[in-house]
Amino acid sequence: MKLLTDWGFTRAGWRSNQHGEYWVLAQAFLILSFVILPIYQPAMLGELSKLIYFVWAIAFGIGLVAAVFLLKGLWDLGDSLTPLPYPKNNGQLVQTGVYSVVRHPLYSGVILAALSWTMFVLSLSHLVGTAILFTFFDAKASKEEAWLIQRYLDYPDYCQRVKKLIPKMY
Image 1 (cartoon, rainbow, N blue to C red):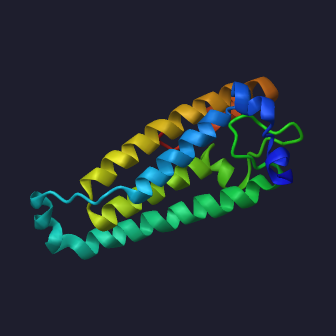
Image 2 (cartoon, rainbow, N blue to C red):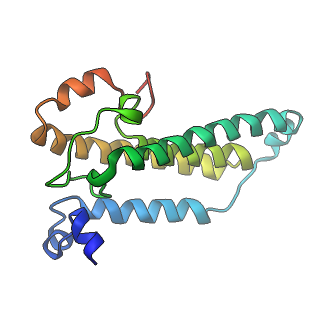
């Protein structure tokens, strides 16, 4: 229980969503849904069987980037880590390491891991799931950024320098 309170969870927050607790529940639901989503491969994807090793190589590369974003993002955040979109009271704004490449590497890592799996299994249902995850994490990041702008005066400058979810693109 101490870990949850260290992250900023409170009983009042669960009742009122004051720090974005419902975002965390929705995130857990979406990730679990993605994991148990059935694989749907349309017949036309059979033509990709000639290129399957190439597609798998790309999927593997994307998976490695996802792992780096996730692991380095966790490491770089250190004590500022919380699953809530609301920043921790004693947290610091991290702009170095992987956070100098993308503002939300943990969200990017989950999205890229989903894309990697989608490509590996060539699943149209997982492609839709990946799009849903992207849309969700983009919205969660926007909510988080509104709070970060209130907390850290230099956050708008950081937003100008570093992209939100996809390095050098978005």
